[in-house]
Length: 490
Image 1 (cartoon, one colour):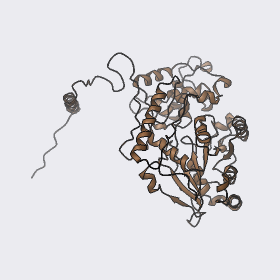
Image 2: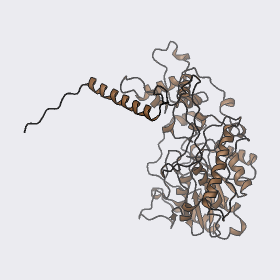
Image 3: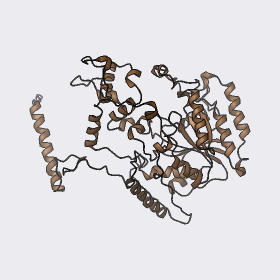
Image 4: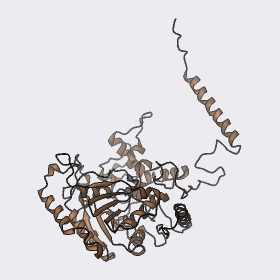
């Protein structure tokens, strides 16, 4: 039987087919909702009143298990995105180092903007009653922030993520606030400090992490600043790479050098002894004897001296972990109720809290000397708190990172790594924020456009910097072969 030849299908026929599908979908949508107008953009109002206000999510968690612990933030409207894009094409307004590179706690956080604190509960109450009270309180907190006179930037709006913080604070004996030393003021929320030290009355240790990315005098200056501003805070430092300093933040030439980190992930435990010594100094007297602090500190100090630099990867040479560490999955009681845990008398629990992407999980892996919790450059990678036993009586609790309410601009939060870059709707304002404070075009060795009338005195804009960087890296659009500004900007 002869095969039939395929009937030719032209581009014009394909266009008519797609048009018929659109008409069919519009008719179906009009039958379901007669007031629906397909000419209205999803992010704009039908009346000439400007952009639509972003709808804040409620405290009711998503029913899907995958999205239950997904962070929720406000979205920009289409009009706001276009306005920011046009603003990035304007000439840069350079700021002096005193105005652009300095920030105090009063500039970053407002006394009127706090964090949600878990309402009081008792063991006799049911799970539904406790969760209902928490949801009502959280909704009132969101309404209070929206009605505040302060212009609050991005912050976590998912109640389930805040519950993770509440549970970690409740079960921990000592809280470790992990702070990125490159911008410790932004990563040290005073509201969280007051919640831990005043509301719960628990000891707090501030860990200046990633000290290998700044100069030594920068670390010492920040430690001196925190000791003067918060005398009761115990400070320690930490880094997970063996090099003394990968980047010197005080020299532009050092920042321009492209230094690659080691391909093999290392978990350097040289500073673990100092970390445990700081925890020992604030540990309660009745629990001080549960953990052999002197033996634990000496064990890490002695093993660092004997370690070979080639065997400090995820696992030892024989494939077994360096220390007998057991990782515990979330307990059954954690899944049954949010209020079934208090501080255990059998363990000394160290809870690690802080912003996303500050290195909480990396510190745990460095303590254990192998990968026991997954890490990623993407902020918010850790979704559920995890407990890891270092000794039979000492355990670590890794809390998911939260974006705490602050009054700094959204571009600053994006540059600090608090927000996932892939979800940034328009990155141009972030480049503009950075270029107004740092000569980005000089750091990247960019050249003005070829058709510039006066290249020596060329006035840069954020858009021009991204366009020049796209040309320098060969980023072009596939159709028009124009510089891909959006890709270069990200």
